[in-house]
Length: 356
Image 1 (tube, rainbow, N blue to C red):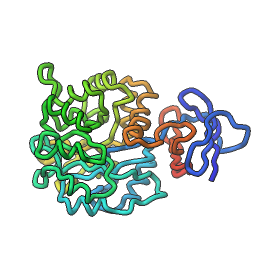
Image 2: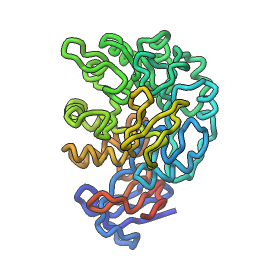
Image 3: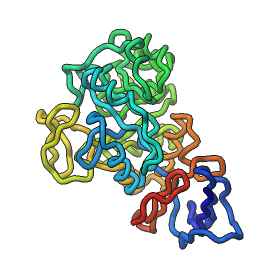
Image 4: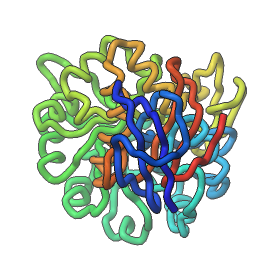
């Protein structure tokens, strides 16, 4: 199947985009007719590598992935990793050991397994009853895991990190600088929601964040204006750059819905003024979509091109996928917006999925 999108504003250049069988085959000017985008802005489709749920559904429910995918596509996300919570291994196994649906509104790239291999001290909104040391034998019985969050200081963690065939992201952890360095040298490639659920950066005790700076690994950042102050967002951007900083939503099931009480990871969560917290007061994910985080980054002063890169090209590179760039040879996933970033079209695998 071939599609040609005409007159797209790609970061200031007016171009045509040719897509064949789900791939971008040409970006430039073409003589043939096509779908006229009327100089609307075009951005790479967003890739959310940390998304628990939305519109009342949770990854741990084990169903409604297609409903969540449609909502995400309407809001600019074209690929995602449904993200699990710290629950029983039986529950996690039922969720991830599925045949991943294809040809849906938003590509499911696999799963992000957040817990149970984490620290009780920094559990956040995770259920402490199910926290346990990592086991590579147990993990190998799980399918479709692209990222796993691990606290490197807990029992068996270093051996697990060395032998894990998924991307290891360090998070929900009390590890110190030296432990962080060892974990990265053993293969850990990323931090999970940086600054959240880990010790802060201190000038004499740099901790895991200091280790990540020194080793120049990837970091995930929730840029919703709540989890991290805008000055820290700008500091992280200046430190890691758009090539290593990844924007995530960490969205939970209340995303897209009104305030109220919800179940998240088997625990009751109260959402007030769109802020989700456990009944003990800990932040429990966000109610933002990834596109809102991109717009918030731009509002904080990060250049538009870099803000979108951190939610498309950079997570695509972490996962070693040909996604996140509007360029020949890459997957044909992109979004079309007006000048105020209102989404007009979402194109997934070269096909128009959503008209708004």
